[in-house]
Picture (tube, rainbow over the protein chains, first blue to last red):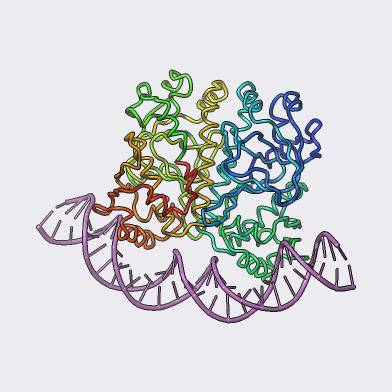
Length: 251
Length: 251
DNA sequence: CCCTTTTGTTGATACAGATCAAAGATACAA
DNA sequence: TTGTATCTTTGATCTGTATCAACAAAAGGG
């Protein structure tokens, strides 16, 4: 969900102290500040799929980095309409330093491992270690750009374009992990239910199902089972997103 | 558009060196770092209503703060569909340190005065003055929260709720400026065309027009002329936004 | 002042996607 | 293995908003 991830991979960072994330899927934080200080502070916690990590309004005791799995950040209107506002993949940051209570619900979409830091000491470290602050700023700005791209999607794209955009993001993120150019063909597991995708895209799950099958029927993607997607012609998928050909989405 | 503004006002900051912004509408930056350093760097520039400040893809030579007027941040799909992704009001920041080219179009919606800093020296200052970096991080995180609230609006709210949300944001921002509780009744000039509102809300201008007049007909707002809005019962307006009663939008 | 342009309103109609409903798949537990 | 819950697909229908079209009202410029 942010350019930071691509940059990390480009920079060749390959491991993260005692962190269990292996090779490419590195933690953005351990590399950014005095490694030892963060080493001492961190603790790992595993959440089951479907488990709520924090509710909006809860005290924010921790900030964290996603180590493995997929977590979602979402919001609900009074009558229950739900909108996901962030998809948190490995290396993404969870939580907001400087805020006492959480604004959004964070849930484990799959089994999730977080590398957690108590918020207060983390904030202290943030004030003391300039490099960490720089890193946080860079990430926050990247996420802001990504959020704005998502606003374009939510406000102006058709259902088909929305699905194509989501799949192209997941595909390119997967290909970064595998160090392949997406144009060579990517295949990946869609670790989200139709409902989760709908919540992310501002659609209903029925529309998501119909449009995924339409893209399959039109040969834009291949499906094996319900959850495994193969993109043979990545440029074709991109052309379905509605985006300007230059630039493209921030991933 | 961000909580930073409310915080600034709460903190009682009342002027900004030689900056022409008077009293409440303070510049977020001059207060944040070594005032003198920024004083030397800054230059003011006025843009006419409708003028493009930067196109997406342009070299980013400056970053800036809005002094007066309203600017918009927007994005366009290949076929011309347009989505505004930020409304920049006095004290809001424009531009992205650390990025060579702009990602979004920035336009003056009304006549706009910017307080500009050349990007390169600003970035250098950012690296040298921790207080400035902290400020930037805080603002970026606030804007990120605001962008996410907007994603909920774009993805899940009805046209009527969208209009009510926009009006309630403008009303509360206005009441902060005037140091009045919005519950006492606010009135303000809508300095946006129906089309600009539509681009912000992910609607067409016809729908915006119809829904504004529906809110007027239902007594939620009063209109004098096309552009002046009075909100007698702010709670009533809030109840039309669809938001959970606690919390509310980040402004 | 008139003329032109921009902005806003209103009506008729079309359609994308929501909603309602039901039936297949798939996974998982006993 | 069967039973149960969850996830997904598919169909029929409805509806909110877009689209198309025309006109009204302001705004700006000579």
